[in-house]
Structures are given as structure tokens and as C-alpha cells.
Image (cartoon, rainbow, N blue to C red; front, top):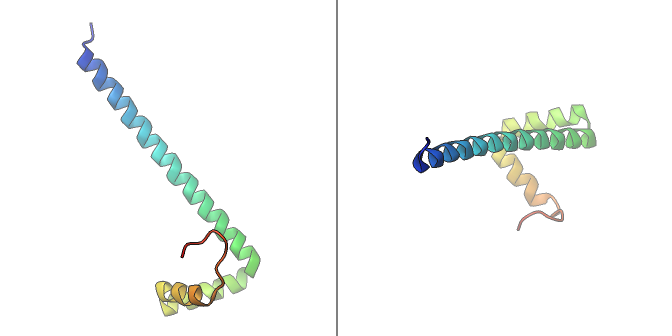
Length: 81
């Protein structure tokens, strides 16, 4: 006979495993979404231009390049600030 404590422990372990699985699936979904975004953006500017932009951003430092582009880019609907 299984005690209430043992049943509760088993239920908790199952819930923790389910949560871990859901976090893993979420991470995979986020990665796929990011890959689709990159593919969409590369398609807009072209493969060679995308490579050139990334090379220049690396030379300037990615954070600085992003900040500079954000200053001159018009705000798109749905973006913060």
C-alpha cells in the first residue's frame, strides 16, 4: 500500500518532469522562431548584404551597431519605447 506522502512525492516528481519537458519544448520553439525571423530578414536584404551587415556589426561591436541602427530606424508598430 502506497502512503499519501509517497503518492504526493510521485505526483510532484511527475509535475517537475512535465515542467522540464515543457521548458525544453518552449526553448526549441523560440529557437525555430528566431531562425525563421533571421531567414525572413535575410530574404528582405539579400544574402550578400546580410553577410556584409553582420561583418560590419561585428567590427563595430554588435551592441553598438544595434544601438546606432535603432536610433536612425523608424519605430515599427509593436516595438517598445
